[in-house]
Length: 104
Ligand SMILES: [Zn+2]
View 1 (cartoon, protein in one colour):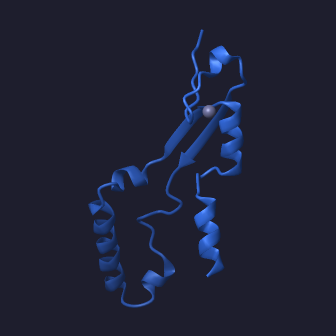
View 2: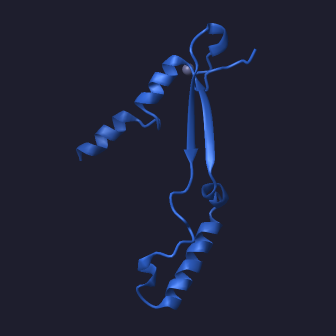
View 3: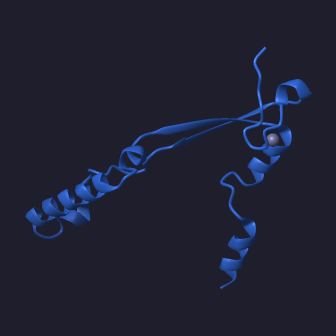
């Protein structure tokens, strides 16, 4: 028998006989770091090339560059109550602080 625990609260889903909900997420770059955009070609083409090289270096020098350029997929098993919480707030944002900031 496959054993499942809730990835959020750690509750044992299998033995409690509760429904299990599966959440799948994917994270991947919505841009091509090597793409030359039109605004890059406005001026001197050589300048655009060096700008592109500089950007490449910047991208590569980031510690997480490798991770950022890759596609990540996540899979979570959730108990019914955590599933409800997830649907209300998928990114785990703090609602209180969001409201505070929008007032200003
Ligand atoms: Zn849970």
